[in-house]
Structure formats: structure tokens, C-alpha cells
Image (cartoon, rainbow, N blue to C red; front, side):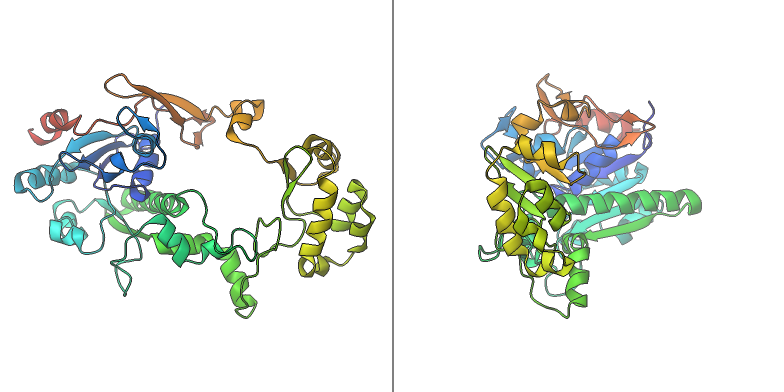
Length: 382
């Protein structure tokens, strides 16, 4: 199958997670991504470990987020290397970076400079906090952005302090937004022949992610966010929304009628909460009643009652359980990729389907500078 972005050349000056996650998605969609890395150390993410898992001598994070790319070794402060990279950019459709504001200008790869040598370029950049204002030089690190943006006060139970999301959610959201902007700019270029500068900040991305809660905050007169005291899964939603322990595991309950749940679960006290407002104002009391009842039987017992009644609920699974189930296997989400030296590893595939076809690529992450000479011979020395 021909992928949508075949013949699109992306020069990737980025590192860490946010912008590399964007170029990964562009590569999955068919673009050729040339990752420019500094000599000797390369992308810092090669040595950024989220666990003690090492894949072929380097970080599992790097291996996961930089598959399906080529590595070109260059020192952007060295004039000879810089000129080589600029020649690549002359031929490129997209340029991506996530340097802090000011750094890209000092290196001579700012948008005003680049568009003079390639007016059709789609120039994508991710910053931590934007390019203006007192925060522009702060480090754009995921936990810091989660903390500063208010996100950590939406998770966990009231009284337990701020609770971060246990994934690099700001990085990945920012990368997704950059891809959206780049795709829109490529479409604009088809219509006008003119390139664009696409800018995304991590702070704006994580604020946008909280659009429902922020809208509620303003409409609610700026009242402080109060999370449920127990079984919290959303700071604003009323009962039954949450996760509850059963006799042998955990059960997640989404929205639903409390009196109807009382009828299904055999709890007469729950049937007394007829007023929808009480599901919010008395959510902790209701959740305690639910927790007491649900703890008496197994998860499968409750699912066998709730699911036929069209109550939105789910077993709370671990990966080892999930990965053995047909519902997961039929998605075909795991692919095996192979590095240039023959090392194989398993990772997720692109979640997008085109005309019903999944988008896979067998190419693993590159060794540092693995493709430098071949790229010079093909694109620079001509």
C-alpha cells in the first residue's frame, strides 16, 4: 500500500520526546525522516532511561520513538557540517526542531533564514512555554509542565496532594498537535505553493487538553477544584465515575443512573438518590455505598450483571492480562522491527488505518550516524 506521505522529506533536528514523537508519526504515514544528531552522543534520549531496560545498548524510549528514521551525524556548530545540513534542508518538505527559544537563531536555522533557501518549507517547532514572556527559557520537561499547568490537581483523591499522570503525556500531546499543524500546512502548500511556520508549545497543548475542566472552572465562578475523596477518576464528574475494588480485582464505572445501579446491585440505599444533583453533591457518600457492595463479589460477577444492562463498566486490567485477550490481539497493535545490525525488538505500531489497512514499518531505530555517508552520496554530493 502506498502511504499518504511518501515522497515527503523531513529533516528532524529534534531530540527528547515531544518533536521526535511528531516525526515518528510522519514516518509512519510514509515520510522519509532524516534525524540529524550531534557526533558522539547523538540525541540525548539515547541515554534517557525510564527504567533499567536497555535495548541494544541504548534507551528503550529512544528505540520506541525513533524507529523508522535515518540518522545523519552533524555538528550544527561546525560550518562544514552546517552547510551539509542546509543542503538537505534545501531539498526538504518539512523541518522540525524543539530547541529552546533563541538557540535555533544562534545556530542559524531560524525560520527567516531557512525560508530564504527553501520558501516551500513547512517549518515545525515545539517549545516549552512559547517564544515570548517570562517563562520562555524554562525547561520544557513533561513533569514540570504537568505540575505548572494544573493537571496534577485533577488526578488522585482529595487530600492526597497533586498526582501526575504516569506517562509523558505533555510530550506526546504536543507532538500530536505539531503533526496536525504540519499536515494542515502541507495542504496549504498544495493550494498556494507557499510554506508555513507551525509553532506548538507544550504549555498550550496541555492547557488545551484540559478544555472541559477549564471551561467548567470559568463557568463555575473560579471555584477551587475539589476531587472526590475516594475512588477518584475525574475531578468534576459525579458518582459513580471511578474505580472500585471487587473481591478479586478492580472495576471501573463510568456515567450511569445511581438508582438503576442500586437496583442492579441490590443496594436499596442507592435507590434513594433520585435527584441527579445528589450524584454530584453527595458523590463521596454514594461512592462509599458502591464500594461496600462491589467488594463482596468478583469483577466477572458484576460485569455479568452490569454489561447486559448497558452500564458502562470495565475490568481494570494489567498488560499481562490485556495482551492475552482476543480483543487486544485482533487490533494487531504490536509489531517487530529490525535495526540495521539485525537486532530485533517489539513495539507498538501506528494507530492510524488508511482504507482499512494498518500502517507498519519493519525498520527499527538507527545507530548514531548510520546513514550519514549514504545521505551525503545521495542528497549532498550531487
